Amino acid sequence: MTVAEVIDSVIDNDVAISPTSLHMDIRDLSIYYGEKLAVGGISLPLRRGKITALIGPSGCGKTSFLTTLNQLSSLNSDVRVDGDIFFDGENLVKDSIDFLTLRRRIGMIFQKPNPFPLSIFRNLDLPLKEHGVKSRALRQEKIEKALQDVGLWEEVKTRLNTPALALSGGQQQRLCIARALILEPEILLMDEPCSALDPISSGVVEDLIMRLREDYTVVIVTHNLAQAKRISDFTAFFWTENNAGKMIEFGDSQCLFQSPKNALTSAYISGTKG
Ligand SMILES: Nc1ncnc2c1ncn2[C@@H]1O[C@H](COP(=O)(O)OP(=O)(O)OP(=O)(O)O)[C@@H](O)[C@H]1O
Image 1: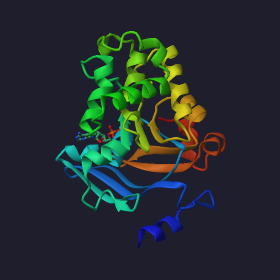
Image 2: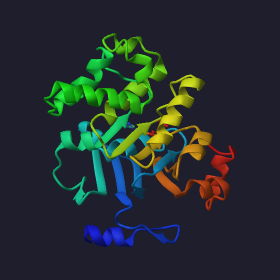
Image 3: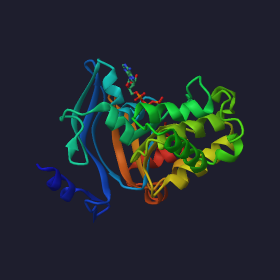
Image 4: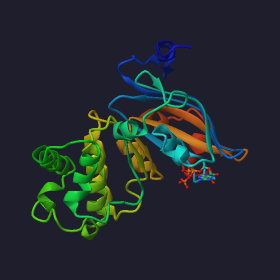
């Protein structure tokens, strides 16, 4: 099957997805740690400029799936991946990929904010230098813009040379998002980005994620079902069956939360299972 045929064949909620709105197409993806199947048979279209939430109980493979989308999981030599991930004419599973370029195009935000133990400025300057932005003036311009984009500029503009680790947890997470955005990615993968934050910081980061919609394609793992319902356009519900994760249901978030098609989804979101 060619990439174009695959794109043409994607049907979701009885509506064909146009090739321009399909940003990444995951087909029959299975991830193994050694011999053990962690999560299997996942097919999922990621729409451009939309937020897709991955929900499900602990251990059903959400993080394994997420970290396979930018091939981060391939750093673990025990990991084996079957299936296809079509992205911009390439198959990330089967073609040989330049990881530095891929990780610039697909940014990742982790559960625990992980700024470098450097100044706020150098946290953003370093990735730009690493990716070949030679002009200091241009780097400064990009740094200010990234900090403005995450709503941090006014809070830190007078202390750019102070340690990033002295920021609050929520500020650190916004700095990490700025660090991803500064490389102008197309897709942002977020693994429970609010779960280590206090409720106020969590709300600020959640608002930021919603502002990223349209400009970026976002995939977010969250255990917070209310958050998934609030912020996402599409939701994929994962579950563990016979010791392996699988996707039970995928669709428009409002439909999935209001009238799930599968009894397991219904039980999970109503809190009677999982
Ligand atoms: N590095 C690893 N080596 C071996 N097995 C792993 C590894 N990482 C995850 N697993 C296994 O893969 C399965 C899926 O784990 P994963 O962390 O992807 O689930 P999850 O849904 O993200 O869980 P949580 O919500 O708790 O983060 C689990 O059985 C887990 O034990």
